[in-house]
Image (cartoon, rainbow, N blue to C red):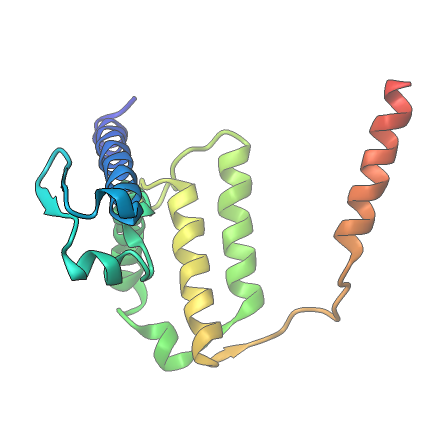
Length: 172
């Protein structure tokens, strides 16, 4: 395991511990029998009666996202910023097929055993995540070109049914 991977692994492990403590805290806060007790975790003591807790636990929880992965995606984004400009996709828009192809190439390279992109030295998985995040941002903003082929909705479900039939036939 190289040094960066080791650091990311250690950060992820720490993040998992914090997430477990947060889950215990949220469970305790939500339990009406314990509303007057203090809730302790490894970093701080939280008053179970804090009104911010009651509101905060109902908002988008970013604490569950693995920080090392997000930070690594930030490195990939920096790599792209230096090559293409910081918000180039928001200004110029994107073509869906270009980002699909790039994500697929990174995933295929990873799947075939190449862990890191040779140009950046950063994980192919992080490159795929970052590219998909940019594509999703463009879709949400409406500044993308949808150049996908005509929809074939439902074909994956049909193929999954056929695969299940094949497995069942084989196991008889």
